[in-house]
Amino acid sequence: MAENIPRLLVATEAPPNGAGGGPAIIRQMLKDWPAENLFWWSCFPDRDRHFGRQVAAHHVARIPPKFYPNRRWCAQKSWLLEKIWAPWAARHFQKKLAVVKPEVVWVIPHCWAIPPLAQVLPQSKTGFHVSIHDYADVGANTPKFGKRRSRNLADMAEKLYAGAITRDAISQPMLDDLRARTGCDGSVARAGLEPEDFDYLSAKTGARMDSIRIAYAGTILAEKEFALFAQALAQIRRQLPLPATIEFFGDHSYRSRGWFDSSWMNERGHLPARELSQALKECAWGFLPMELADDNPRYNRFSLPTKFVSYLAAGLPVITLGHPESSAVKMASQYEVGLCSTTGDAGKLSAQLLAALSQPDPKSKYRVEIQRCALAEFDARRMRAVLWGNFQKCAATTR
Image 1 (cartoon, rainbow, N blue to C red):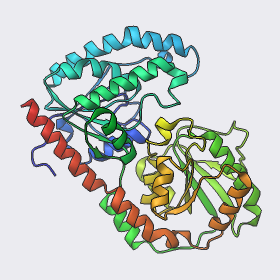
Image 2 (image 1 turned 180 degrees about the horizontal axis):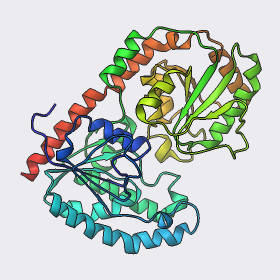
Image 3 (image 1 turned 90 degrees about the vertical axis):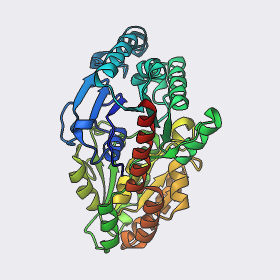
Image 4 (image 1 turned 180 degrees about the vertical axis):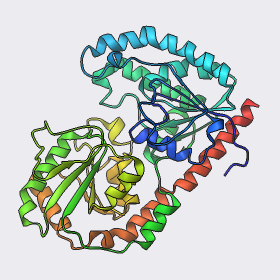
């Protein structure tokens, strides 16, 4: 790791202890980064600090929750953010940049953090590194922000990426896509396994369980596919050698959904990282759905959900469902880490699930490939070393 730790400002939409895959990646990549050399700029304040990420100062260009375009009045709220909030936030960021005087800025362009950062950073004299976790014009954002506005956000993020000293993206397909459109190269950086996770995988031996607990971590984005999975699993539950359940881990509740069955689906809530890791280890499988229709290729083909890494770290074989060109299916096809399916037929999926879930010790069966995949694709220590080296390159340009 770097001997001299530069004065770093993280600039993104989420706070230091925000929930979700993106903030989790940031925290992991900043493991052991001294708080006195870490500053933060975001659009939201920390609601709590149960993840334990401390910073020297947290500057917030606050977006009032009622003004964030989520469900109602999205067009009007987006207009207010674009025309009124974003110019003010740009001035706010510029002032904080002058106060903090960072040697390097780490930019994670996400949604409404993009406009103020895109306005200020290219004209600043501070070296910055850009990490693309998701494209701003993914399908989920278009209904909320509007097609034109989402495209503009994506264009601004792309210009930030091209103008950075160093850069990375969350998957190799995304990195290739960005290189083709910007001419700029970068590295792959995403959530990964720590040395203790690899130790766990190496020492872990198979153990029989009294039920088949299937974990789902995070927010459901491909809900149509999740409903298909629930339907297919319901059809074969009585044929399985053990009772099967789905265990939900995350902030959102799905009890109101038509596919939810409280007799065999359990909502475990949002757990701190250590508790979540332990809870996942008590499960038998992890489930990762992506969209089958590929109507949202900007997400489907380029983003890689962090839950995939969480499952591997817990030693869980993964049930991957999605379009053949989706990033997750490509990864699961390259390594035999569980069941990988591209079918949209509930009957065919039921047959596949029956064969996979009837295995007496799936963790042992897939353990070697889980280790191989984790070491080749998700070594956190290796990715962190590359990122910290990039920070030093950026700091050298600032000096």
